[in-house]
Image (tube, rainbow, N blue to C red; front, side, top):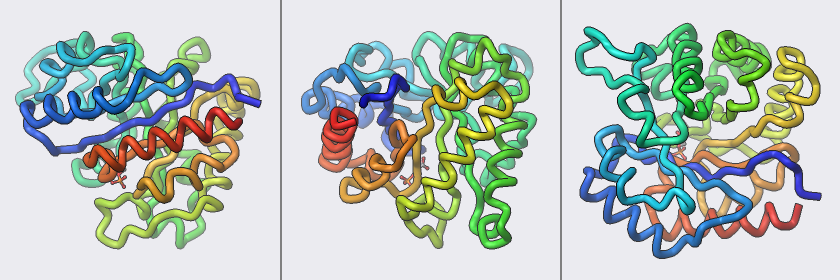
Length: 262
Ligand code: PGA
């Protein structure tokens, strides 16, 4: 049975592609991936590409996401871009990605403010959470997931929680981590259950069942199917493999098959 939860394939291009290269790549994907009825495909280019791609993209085919923004609306914040400045270009925003948390020292309070700013500005925040290798070794996976959810969502009301998507991205499995080790589908099973049960505790059982939960971390065309088979996984957040058209298109094909089977 198809679950009513929304399904996603999200491409996180990270700090790759100039605006010109992004435009060429978008065209290539647009030629190969028809608009999907059952899966929302979201592309997250670097900030400087958002405006030009927003003019080029067919939003029935792909939506755009911001990779980052500052949570205040305007003011003396040199070098920052506010969500109000980019909200007309995008429908989604990544928040709390581990590269933001650990490379740029983004705090959980900042993350909570960003989630709230995205919602206030009509965007869907994709809140990324996940434990580090050390937290996992120390048996703190559940505590980390609970803490990051509680803190990241603390500004989000019960009315607004349905506007949030959660992405489970264990830091030890993300390809940018120098000792990255791909997760096994069984690793996700437990984490996705913990996420849903904690959301249920915070917002009620139905919301815990209805919220979309994605997986991210070294997903490629060969492994995507195994992750999508895990109960409760509603899609994938893809970094490295999303930069290669053949890989990304193959992942979309796999997702189509898997979600249609359910
Ligand atoms: P990866 O990145 O697929 O290259 O591991 C995923 C992410 O960081 O969102």
